[in-house]
Amino acid sequence: MRGLAAGILVWVAFGWSAGAHEAARNPRLMDFPATASGGLILPVDLHTHSVFSDGSVWPDIRVQEAKRDGLTAMAVTEHIEYQPHAADIPHPDRNRSFKLASDVAKSDVLIIAGAEITRDMPPGHINAVFITDANALKVDNVEVAIRTANAQGGFLFWNHPYWHRQSPDGIARLNPLQERLIAARLLHGVEVANGEDYSESALRIALDNNLAILGTSDIHGLIDWDFDVANGGHRAVTLVLAPTRTPAAIRDTLRAGRTVAWFKQTLIGRPAHVEEVVRASLSLEAGDVVEKSRVLAIKLKNASPVRYTLRLKAPQAFYNMGDVVVVPPYGEVALQVTGGVTPQTLQLDFEVLNSITAPKQTLSLTLKPKAG
Image (cartoon, rainbow, N blue to C red; front, side):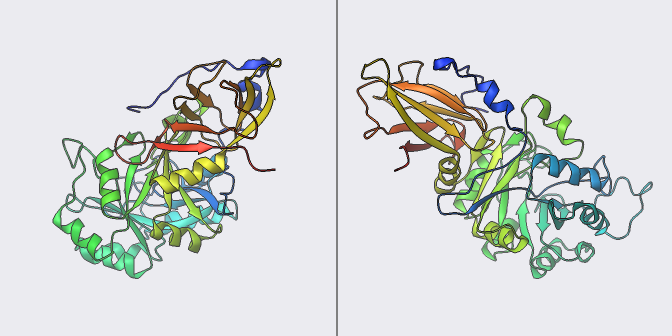
């Protein structure tokens, strides 16, 4: 990712081993702690494909992958108009993939009914999730399809608006049809991260038009192969800051825009929402002074699957490393702080380098030890 620190090796004092801590818990699992207010951080993938459109696997494999990743929910979003496997897998029922996925998911993963309205620009590709009947979207007029999905209670978002096949220069731009859909509240979100891609222009559209910020895998092949999970990769997902783990709560929270995209270990969203995720993840603990000095030992702990890259702001300084520190998933880092800081006065000002809160902007926050 542009502008993000990556691949930084951190030497840890006191003989602590980051690898040993990471091995204690599967870093693949997207298991986020609750927020300070008691809300939930729910990882969902709202853009997936199987052989029932242009994907390469049966729907039950998509469910198994979602379980392995610890997703709260996944949407089945087969193309309505594009069915390249129809000669081998004829299926006039566009709900068939959702039914097959639901049959094997049980209660482990919430399966959300959806479809991808697949058109040229305008309006491009639009996902409709939380719908009740994908067959009703098989109509010639795209605005009728969009209004029908909304009438079913759907949440609709613009897929990969920067896609080079529909926007040759890779820049997302609104056209008059999309502007009308947004004004009529018929389009509710936009993908800023899709698969291996991130778009600043799509993020700007989301921020300027009060749309939900989304990250999706848009998976067609295998999650483990496409996102190199064996070497620490992860699918792009949307973190939904919902009060409860129910389909209705997820849909209502999406409509309210309380979302953060998690893409290549980077959190993308509005500052307040990104901060909720970071503060739920990270905690600061004070230790003792080092060998009767005025250097204070501390620990940064991470209760989430995100690998955080933080830069300590001046004039504060670490004694045992430079100003950039990586806090591993479900791990901790032992540090030493100069300047005569005490446990009572300890607070550290960071820039979260693996965050994007607007084009070319990152989150800044202050961490303090928890009282008591």
